[in-house]
Image (cartoon, rainbow, N blue to C red; front, side):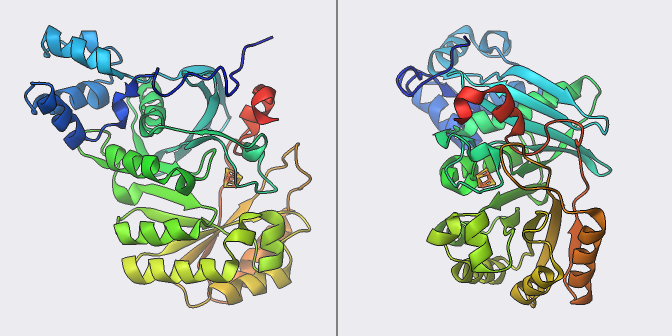
Length: 363
Ligand code: SF4
């Protein structure tokens, strides 16, 4: 049987070298200075990591041998092992990557008219327990280090290099609750956004939360130009508690207060993600209730026809009902779109591939 980690066998953080992708440029400069090196070397190292996408310190030929050895002693260049790569007929590619300790994560490349987008994972598993989600089966195993999130984008970019394409946007909507791993997520944002690294524009980055309210206030105060989405999925507190148990701790009323604070503080529009589950939250009454909830807010509603998840009981909403839901919202003056379905012929829903391939991790 394939060896999979347990808490006991997992490599401890002290044994593992820090991923160099976890360092922001100024942090690398500080490290260089502390180690008797010139700070400008940081830009050269970033060039190797993010422009040339080099994966071995020893091949960074414009650095001294001594510096290369120091780097290799202190850091690792995180290379994710591709376990499975599934390509959809629409060009979507889903990767199952293995981490240094044997755990696995999913990363998805989506192709749009406006460019290539990567959906990244922030945690191994998730403790939020949304009732429709395969990623939460088996709970949270561990947070990802910032560098392990960055490495997903670098890895996909390396795959795109072969066809001379570029990752132009990033969505933080893969496995895990990004605000439950807040500091690593913020470090990730700053690293991929930096013009000396992958230079992904802030307006091309989207982060989504299930509603960890204190972190929404904190994020609002960061005042970054990042796109922000709330996974709402229900128009009232009873239904939301049924679909998303986080609503017991962070109630819908309080969530909407935090949303108003975010909009007032940043002046930015917020997106509400609303997955449509057949017979659960997709009636005209639900659409009217949703319109009442978000009316007057600077917002956009993104309707997501949800894939059938074998481990869960939910079924898809029929097409005509999806359009009727959209029409009800439009008639009420709500800005709404239906998310284009991608990767329907692969295990596209979040956590499905990992749940299928790594059953031991998701029990
Ligand atoms: S939907 Fe997101 S927050 Fe909810 S359980 Fe899945 S990964 Fe966690």
